[in-house]
Image 1 (cartoon, helix red, strand yellow):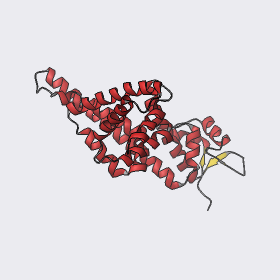
Image 2 (tube, rainbow, N blue to C red):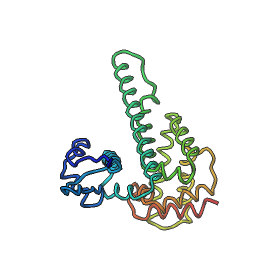
Image 3 (cartoon, rainbow, N blue to C red):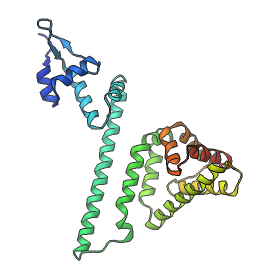
Image 4 (cartoon, rainbow, N blue to C red):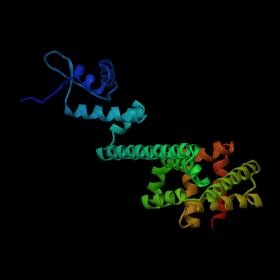
Amino acid sequence: MGLVTTSIQELARLAKVSPRTLRYYDQIGLLPAKRNPQNGYREYDASAVDRLQIIRYFQLFGFSLTAIQKLLDQSPARQTAALAQQRQRLLDEREHLTTLLTTLDRILAARNGGPQMTDSEKFSAFKQEQLTTNDREFGQEARDRYGTAAVDTSQRKFAALSETDYQAMQACEQRLLTNLKTVAQSGDLTSDLAQQVFNDHKTWLCFTWNNYSAETHRGLAELYLSDERFASYYNDRVGLPNATTTLVAIIRRYAQ
């Protein structure tokens, strides 16, 4: 008894793509098809169907075909880890939407004569949005370096900040960015302003870190250099291409 295969038309119907798309995937090596020895038509076995399922899911997640091809060239364990990461991202987005809906319901209720919201409750959705965005962009790298438990603890501490502490944290970062721009332009790492940049960065971290150490602070600075996404965070917000390297130099100098 031969292996069960699926025709290109049937697979296209199942996957909600066109046969032309499947032919293109075959041509670029993303989804190689077998050929029927009797008529030369493309057909697909069970492993190809499973592969297309993964392709379609990662397309929904916003991956390019090139990125999907690289992922499929990796081990099954790495593919599973990538799927798990996307699942967590969806859970985070669902939590964010739930928070938004809950806040909107509270706003509508208050406008209709119901219980009034505290100042902290009025802005809780925006804090959750920031937490979700940071985790989506930087969470995996932070977990790889510091461990899941440490990152989760930091996120819980951030989520539990009072409105006063949250606003103080934002003001601290804004002051840091303003002073960092001045130091990056002058290049003077020995100035009082450079020392203030370090102090503000340390204070900003301590809003969410359970245990501060100079060693961990220096390690974070190296992460800023090794990952372009971290580097662009400060470069973009300060508006100078040397903002991140200046901050790292300051941390190296003062985190002792």
